[in-house]
Length: 409
Image (cartoon, rainbow, N blue to C red; front, side, top):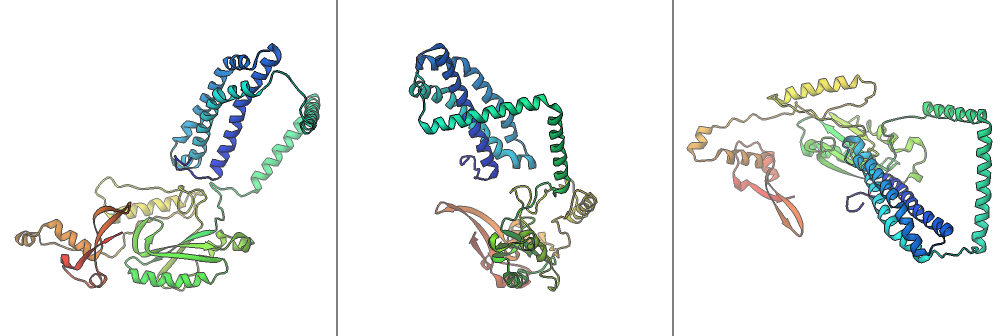
């Protein structure tokens, strides 16, 4: 699992539990056949091991191939199903292969070395266990015989179980992937498009002071200028990660992470032109940031940003009408204030100034310009050209290379 990048979680642990059972089953097949041959044919341990493996080698290989044929294709599935079951399938497939190798090599060798031809009575603790196991087995046999003789009782018990399952299914809440209280929540404060980074930071600081006063909050960190929903840098958006107190200090549904996230929606209601979005992290990483699923829309023609935003809005409105979906939204924003810059190309050529240099200088002045990457101390660093803050705050019509400095990020 470490080689494949899997972590120890519920899915991999469940896969390991099943795989351990399969490993034991393969070894039991070898052991029981070996013991039967020794008891009935009175062969030496080595000869019994050779004959036993000549009889069960084919079935063991077939077991491994059948299980791999079931689980290996699941490991290559995409989408949400692949995210949920890939680790489970690969864990079982690899374990099954290892179990087959162990059953074909190590198990017969240990049988020939350890098991003795003669049968002796075990020590008293094992005799007590064997007697109890035998009595339990006989009671089970009598119970099965009783059920077979009274089919009406068996059908009644089966019908009662079906009714109980139906009642549980109709009463318990359902969902695609049920939410879990993982001890932290996400929050995204959003200002109007075009808001400066300093203004976003000020709003974030005010929200942080209010959230730290809540009884459920233990710690939090906020990054101004990062949009958690679109994974992009936007000056009017911030990303916050709020760590909650331990579960034993937040007893009751009103103090759960889900309830806490709902209350965060109104914590910045009095802040002008600010919208706060808070949500519980998804129970399975990779499905979506806010739970549910993600979809992407691509324009393969010459559509402009406003046209793409209009089409995305229509798609969102149509999705909201579906009863299965809730909280549908889009991250595209076409109403961001922009400057329309016209370059006098003839004058630039007359001054022997390359066109790309003009645009690169403007990028470095008003935003950031990517230069290259370099490796130092065993880590890659990105070189970004950006003007100093005082130069970016002033609206200049031109910029020189002396007003920009490279920064490694």
